[in-house]
Length: 122
Image (tube, rainbow, N blue to C red; front, side, top):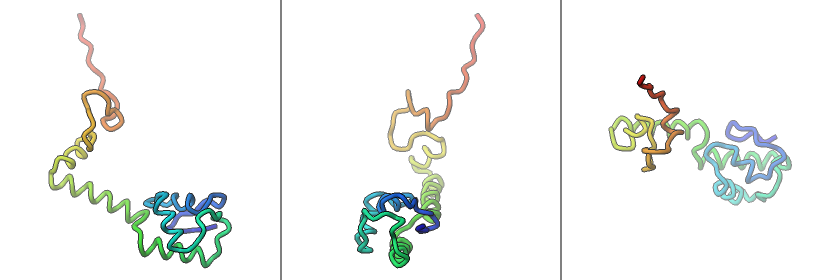
């Protein structure tokens, strides 16, 4: 039962897959963490010793921004963009796609459901 960065890692998964359950750690970061800790990445999470858990916890805590602090950092970056009034900030404010996608058609996920059009009586 590995508990790292406030997340309970699944016992039946391999270590490098289990680490990806932590927000802010993807596959490449998980493999890098395993290599730094000198732990076999194919080892099951359930087979980790207490010392190995402690090593992983220390590496993640000291070298990576994860979970709540990362979410806060992302939110603050978006807020900063909106405050300075740059193009990306305006797109965030208006709820439109930020990275140059077309909006004449598509973009329904970002724009939300269509507004009902008023039908004219003939």
